[in-house]
Image 1 (cartoon, rainbow, N blue to C red):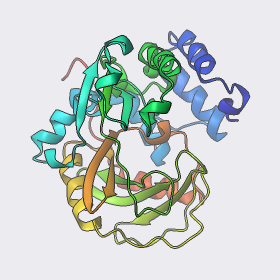
Image 2: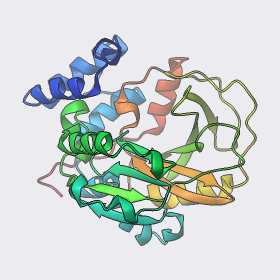
Image 3: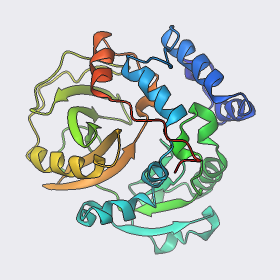
Image 4: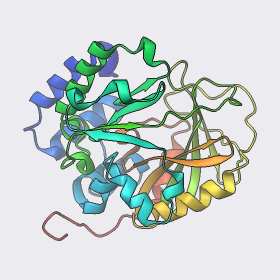
Length: 302
């Protein structure tokens, strides 16, 4: 069951989930997993990747993960790895929408909140920018408790702010927007690449190995129905992904290859909240084998 199809209004969904925030994490995670994947997760002895992500939420508390999940603080982390050149231009960071001086922004930019996922607005023509509507959305996104939604621990202590950055455009890209290259990394070793295209139109997805061999695997989005050539920057992106993932048992490193240059997107510790159905189902176990669970690290031990 996909409750997004039942409750289509995003604000209403988050209000309902927020009202359930007092339910213990283990109970809520078990309920959501069963609701979405029609099976109960084996969290105490996980084998599947999706099950190990639930264990990760519940048992691994590294403060560096909060920094990595914060859309502003992560920039300093990327800098610390000697990869500052992969960052997009930063136009400002604000605590409230009212602080943003839109008149001083360029004609094109991206708005995103530090404490969320999918809380972005892409402005491609400031003359057509719906200021009032966007201010309302930003205010709601800032108040949203994303931790209550999927019990993703790394978001729990993030200070809600608004980041305004450069809008990347790839004039050579046949798809709408820019292609997302998402590197699934285990202890600093990239193992698979998830390619997302047309994310805001008819979202499609392929999964490759690190040698750009297409795998016969699908998820909740259709596969791309045309041949996608290996990006010229694949080797460079792999090196960036290795550096950015070295501190974590697992992280997905999201990158872009635009105009012959690598750009950093974000770090994602719980892809798809861990509620994704792979086809074939065996791929869930294949990923799970690569995810070597670390020792439990709670907030008292860090």
